[in-house]
Length: 250
Length: 75
Image 1 (cartoon, rainbow over the protein chains, first blue to last red):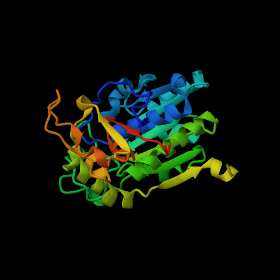
Image 2 (image 1 turned 90 degrees about the horizontal axis):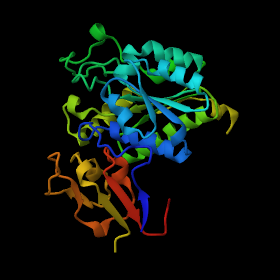
Image 3 (image 1 turned 30 degrees about the vertical axis):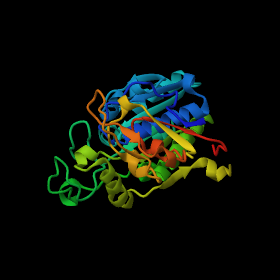
């Protein structure tokens, strides 16, 4: 018997604090697998956000820095410019990246900073117990939109990949999902590619991973995956929105 | 004859059952034992059906599962 699947070395042995069935854990593992497969564990510095993923610094086996709320891309910019030979990534949720951190992510992308951003979009504020996020779907019931999000009152959800694709800075923008094994494997490839972009000095790369928050959505873990597939993907279409290497033909 | 084997790290399991729905061969189920967190970890109740496809481990949010497979390896 040969071991064909085990815990990546880039993850610590610490049990994660996430709720049962939360796909944060899957996405952590995908980042860990990407780091392992590129052999960059000793050269990687991660920047953790604020939100459920705030404890990411305990779970990754590389150097980690905690940033102020939303400021992970700015902190990552500083680290990358001082230590350009290191691989720098941020791991941010939608409340962190698309709400309070909107300025930092847009400017980091516009500058084409050579960093990798893993953006976990679960359409709700998880840690603070289920308030409406900028990415909450139209009609979605949350603690602060109990009758569902309405366009008249709360505007439209923000599609980060499409928004950043209007800029010239990003080298790679992709939206992937974590609702079944096939899509998780695709997400893993996209995250690895985002790291490769940085390795080849192509500039800013972001992967948006659609994720679940079954507790705050009020669903079981299995039903949350179905909800993601049926409700989030129609509003957040999957795909690659920018890939500069595709133009170069490699 | 089982082609694969799933090993469960009992203490990490949170009983979310995503692995159970991901498994195409119905190998896993929620077990009767309880870990120190109070969850019932999954168990391979039909290990002979396991092909070592790793889909359960791919969907596990807590990296509970280690999968081993007999050759020929596909990886």
